[in-house]
Length: 423
Ligand code: AOS
Ligand code: ZN
Ligand code: ZN
View 1 (cartoon, rainbow, N blue to C red):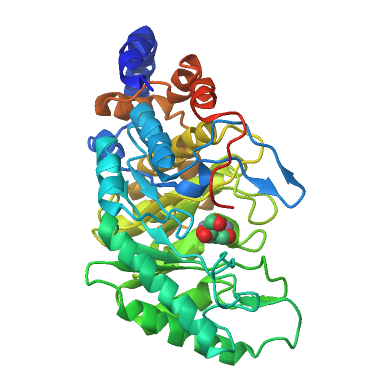
View 2: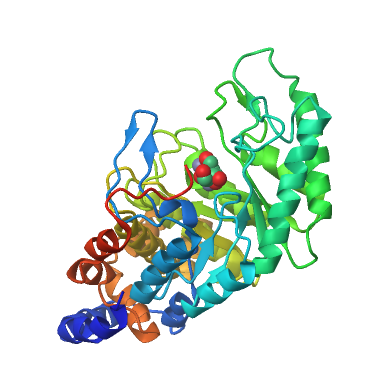
């Protein structure tokens, strides 16, 4: 794919309109002097499993040209990164993305300017040659042999991650129960913590363990790591390298996610994110497509809390997408998600925090709302585009993706009936 050659023409055509918008926002809004450099530092990892079309139990409709192997998944993320210069990492899922030649895979990723973000373990499915089943759980299982198998899998994932240069393990457990009485909650919790301790012991000194929580699905009565409190209590028992990971789609409807984020961050136990959006459950829709104000409010807490702790916005938390799109081109969807996340971050950087503090202390509720919504209602697209331009990306990545006919080229190259490995 020849993004580089066309990118120059694409930007040249759009430059004067962009400059007009960029000059306008700078004349209208007080832009912090370090805003563009913060945006340029901010990279968002792409999940390998989002590169293929998703599906539901009712069916799956592929758009064609999906990556058929890990090399092609890396090429797809490389393509996104060439367009937006903001997707410089890939998050792998093992065993879907297992490799017998990590050195070659690492070299290929480096050619595309990509690093390896968190590696994800999978004990929610049975694999073809697996000895024992995870039907009734993995790290919580009543049978010690199943727990041992699941622990061993996680340790293998860490080992594969080490070879690729990854620095974190994300654990999401589907463990739970479907009916009242099926599970002794206390014992399931204790067994899970014991298993996690064994995994934690295999973690290199400079690694982090992220423990995801999820309210329901595939278990529909209880999930053993079902909410942030359960994850938080577990990671506290593990040690300083263990953190809670917030997947935006894993809460019960109307949960105040920004408050959860704020408290986890304050307690030093927020590890990172799986960004997506949802209307009903774990819908894994494009970030910012349903509740952009919520995404902004989350970033508002992040900027406030990270600044209070002197944290580096770009490096001190794990920024990942976890999406699955049933009807969109997966690459277009990911470009949209990355941009939505950047916009929420930019808007949060524009909040007048000094004025907000004064308004809060005066109990001026109206002013507080006005201050937040003034930032949220600012059209920050030219700021995000400027950061992209300075990094060498496209002013309009989605338009360039379409103008280049990238999906058609991928279909020509890979075929119309390909299916990415994964879910
Ligand atoms: C599942 O709901 C979680 O979001 C996990 O992060 C999972 O590993 C990922 O979605 C791939 O299925
Ligand atoms: Zn997730
Ligand atoms: Zn999920």
